[in-house]
Image 1 (tube, rainbow, N blue to C red):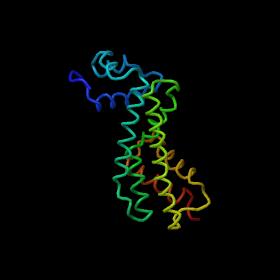
Image 2: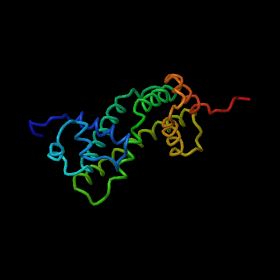
Image 3: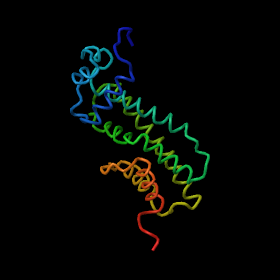
Image 4: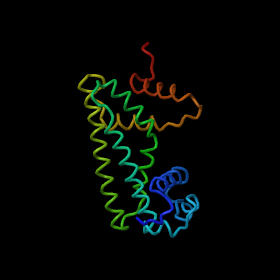
Length: 191
Protein backbone atom coordinates (compact mmCIF):
# COMPACT_ATOMS: atom_id res chain seq x y z
CA UNK A 1 0.00 0.00 0.00
CA UNK A 2 1.15 3.52 -0.72
CA UNK A 3 3.64 5.55 1.27
CA UNK A 4 1.24 8.45 1.71
CA UNK A 5 -1.27 6.41 3.68
CA UNK A 6 -2.41 8.43 6.68
CA UNK A 7 -3.71 5.50 8.75
CA UNK A 8 -2.53 2.04 9.67
CA UNK A 9 -4.53 -1.13 9.13
CA UNK A 10 -4.92 -1.37 12.89
CA UNK A 11 -6.33 2.16 13.15
CA UNK A 12 -8.63 1.53 10.21
CA UNK A 13 -9.88 -1.79 11.56
CA UNK A 14 -10.31 -0.51 15.12
CA UNK A 15 -12.43 2.38 13.84
CA UNK A 16 -14.38 -0.01 11.60
CA UNK A 17 -15.00 -2.39 14.51
CA UNK A 18 -16.19 0.38 16.80
CA UNK A 19 -18.57 1.78 14.20
CA UNK A 20 -20.00 -1.61 13.28
CA UNK A 21 -20.53 -2.69 16.88
CA UNK A 22 -22.18 0.59 17.85
CA UNK A 23 -24.09 1.46 14.69
CA UNK A 24 -24.36 -1.73 12.64
CA UNK A 25 -23.58 -2.65 9.06
CA UNK A 26 -26.24 -0.50 7.41
CA UNK A 27 -25.09 2.72 9.09
CA UNK A 28 -21.43 2.14 8.21
CA UNK A 29 -20.18 4.52 5.50
CA UNK A 30 -16.81 5.65 4.21
CA UNK A 31 -17.84 9.24 4.96
CA UNK A 32 -18.35 8.51 8.65
CA UNK A 33 -15.21 6.36 8.79
CA UNK A 34 -13.15 9.09 7.13
CA UNK A 35 -14.40 11.60 9.71
CA UNK A 36 -13.39 9.28 12.56
CA UNK A 37 -9.92 8.77 11.04
CA UNK A 38 -9.64 12.46 10.08
CA UNK A 39 -8.86 11.62 6.45
CA UNK A 40 -10.65 12.07 3.15
CA UNK A 41 -12.99 9.41 1.80
CA UNK A 42 -10.70 9.20 -1.23
CA UNK A 43 -7.85 7.98 0.95
CA UNK A 44 -9.98 4.96 1.93
CA UNK A 45 -11.17 4.38 -1.65
CA UNK A 46 -7.51 4.05 -2.70
CA UNK A 47 -7.45 0.69 -0.92
CA UNK A 48 -11.06 -0.51 -0.94
CA UNK A 49 -13.56 -0.38 -3.79
CA UNK A 50 -16.52 -0.28 -1.41
CA UNK A 51 -17.51 -0.79 2.21
CA UNK A 52 -18.03 -4.52 1.70
CA UNK A 53 -14.39 -4.96 0.70
CA UNK A 54 -13.25 -3.06 3.77
CA UNK A 55 -15.62 -4.88 6.12
CA UNK A 56 -14.67 -8.30 4.74
CA UNK A 57 -10.96 -7.43 5.14
CA UNK A 58 -11.67 -6.26 8.69
CA UNK A 59 -13.46 -9.55 9.43
CA UNK A 60 -10.47 -11.49 8.08
CA UNK A 61 -8.20 -9.43 10.34
CA UNK A 62 -10.40 -10.09 13.39
CA UNK A 63 -10.73 -13.80 12.74
CA UNK A 64 -6.99 -14.19 12.12
CA UNK A 65 -6.22 -12.45 15.40
CA UNK A 66 -8.78 -14.54 17.27
CA UNK A 67 -7.50 -17.83 15.83
CA UNK A 68 -3.85 -16.96 16.43
CA UNK A 69 -4.55 -16.23 20.08
CA UNK A 70 -6.86 -19.22 20.41
CA UNK A 71 -4.28 -21.56 18.88
CA UNK A 72 -1.64 -20.23 21.28
CA UNK A 73 -3.69 -21.29 24.33
CA UNK A 74 -2.29 -24.18 26.36
CA UNK A 75 -4.74 -26.97 25.63
CA UNK A 76 -2.80 -29.74 27.38
CA UNK A 77 -4.67 -29.76 30.69
CA UNK A 78 -7.74 -31.68 31.76
CA UNK A 79 -11.23 -30.62 30.76
CA UNK A 80 -11.87 -28.42 33.80
CA UNK A 81 -8.66 -26.41 33.34
CA UNK A 82 -9.36 -26.07 29.62
CA UNK A 83 -12.95 -25.04 30.39
CA UNK A 84 -11.74 -22.22 32.66
CA UNK A 85 -9.14 -21.15 30.09
CA UNK A 86 -11.68 -21.23 27.28
CA UNK A 87 -14.34 -19.23 29.14
CA UNK A 88 -11.77 -16.60 30.13
CA UNK A 89 -10.57 -16.43 26.52
CA UNK A 90 -14.09 -16.06 25.14
CA UNK A 91 -14.80 -13.28 27.64
CA UNK A 92 -11.68 -11.48 26.47
CA UNK A 93 -13.06 -11.72 22.92
CA UNK A 94 -16.73 -11.42 23.83
CA UNK A 95 -17.73 -9.54 20.70
CA UNK A 96 -16.16 -11.92 18.14
CA UNK A 97 -19.47 -13.69 17.54
CA UNK A 98 -21.30 -10.38 17.09
CA UNK A 99 -18.60 -9.10 14.74
CA UNK A 100 -18.56 -12.26 12.63
CA UNK A 101 -22.34 -12.20 12.18
CA UNK A 102 -21.80 -9.15 9.99
CA UNK A 103 -20.53 -11.39 7.18
CA UNK A 104 -24.12 -12.51 6.59
CA UNK A 105 -25.15 -8.90 5.99
CA UNK A 106 -22.71 -8.41 3.13
CA UNK A 107 -24.66 -8.95 -0.09
CA UNK A 108 -23.74 -11.58 -2.64
CA UNK A 109 -22.62 -10.61 -6.13
CA UNK A 110 -20.08 -8.14 -4.88
CA UNK A 111 -16.37 -7.98 -5.77
CA UNK A 112 -14.13 -11.02 -6.14
CA UNK A 113 -12.12 -9.81 -3.14
CA UNK A 114 -15.23 -9.87 -0.95
CA UNK A 115 -16.31 -13.29 -2.21
CA UNK A 116 -12.80 -14.69 -1.57
CA UNK A 117 -12.82 -13.24 1.94
CA UNK A 118 -16.29 -14.64 2.65
CA UNK A 119 -15.16 -18.07 1.50
CA UNK A 120 -12.03 -17.93 3.65
CA UNK A 121 -14.04 -16.73 6.66
CA UNK A 122 -16.34 -19.70 6.24
CA UNK A 123 -13.29 -22.01 6.34
CA UNK A 124 -12.02 -20.27 9.48
CA UNK A 125 -15.41 -20.62 11.12
CA UNK A 126 -15.46 -24.37 10.41
CA UNK A 127 -11.92 -24.69 11.79
CA UNK A 128 -12.87 -22.81 14.94
CA UNK A 129 -15.99 -24.94 15.38
CA UNK A 130 -13.94 -28.14 15.04
CA UNK A 131 -11.58 -26.96 17.75
CA UNK A 132 -14.45 -26.14 20.10
CA UNK A 133 -16.03 -29.47 19.19
CA UNK A 134 -12.77 -31.16 20.27
CA UNK A 135 -13.09 -29.40 23.61
CA UNK A 136 -16.61 -30.80 24.08
CA UNK A 137 -15.39 -34.28 23.12
CA UNK A 138 -12.68 -34.05 25.79
CA UNK A 139 -15.39 -33.25 28.36
CA UNK A 140 -17.37 -36.27 27.25
CA UNK A 141 -14.30 -38.51 27.32
CA UNK A 142 -13.56 -37.42 30.90
CA UNK A 143 -17.26 -37.86 31.81
CA UNK A 144 -17.48 -34.21 32.82
CA UNK A 145 -20.35 -33.29 30.52
CA UNK A 146 -23.50 -35.12 29.52
CA UNK A 147 -23.12 -37.16 26.37
CA UNK A 148 -26.76 -36.89 25.23
CA UNK A 149 -26.76 -33.10 24.82
CA UNK A 150 -25.81 -32.10 21.24
CA UNK A 151 -22.50 -30.31 20.82
CA UNK A 152 -24.20 -27.43 18.97
CA UNK A 153 -26.48 -26.81 21.96
CA UNK A 154 -23.55 -26.75 24.38
CA UNK A 155 -21.47 -24.41 22.24
CA UNK A 156 -24.51 -22.20 21.66
CA UNK A 157 -25.13 -22.02 25.41
CA UNK A 158 -21.51 -21.08 26.07
CA UNK A 159 -21.41 -18.31 23.48
CA UNK A 160 -24.89 -16.97 24.18
CA UNK A 161 -24.36 -16.99 27.95
CA UNK A 162 -21.17 -15.02 27.54
CA UNK A 163 -23.04 -12.50 25.39
CA UNK A 164 -25.47 -11.66 28.22
CA UNK A 165 -25.03 -7.98 29.08
CA UNK A 166 -23.99 -7.16 32.64
CA UNK A 167 -26.66 -4.51 33.25
CA UNK A 168 -26.22 -4.61 37.02
CA UNK A 169 -22.50 -3.80 36.90
CA UNK A 170 -21.53 -6.93 38.82
CA UNK A 171 -17.72 -6.92 39.17
CA UNK A 172 -16.22 -8.69 36.14
CA UNK A 173 -14.45 -11.41 38.17
CA UNK A 174 -17.68 -12.25 39.99
CA UNK A 175 -19.66 -12.11 36.74
CA UNK A 176 -17.30 -14.56 34.99
CA UNK A 177 -17.14 -16.89 38.02
CA UNK A 178 -20.95 -16.96 38.19
CA UNK A 179 -21.27 -17.78 34.51
CA UNK A 180 -18.64 -20.52 34.82
CA UNK A 181 -20.57 -21.97 37.76
CA UNK A 182 -23.87 -21.93 35.90
CA UNK A 183 -22.31 -23.50 32.81
CA UNK A 184 -20.52 -26.12 34.93
CA UNK A 185 -23.13 -26.97 37.55
CA UNK A 186 -26.42 -25.36 36.48
CA UNK A 187 -28.43 -22.90 38.53
CA UNK A 188 -30.39 -25.31 40.71
CA UNK A 189 -29.16 -26.09 44.21
CA UNK A 190 -28.38 -29.70 45.03
CA UNK A 191 -31.52 -30.02 47.16
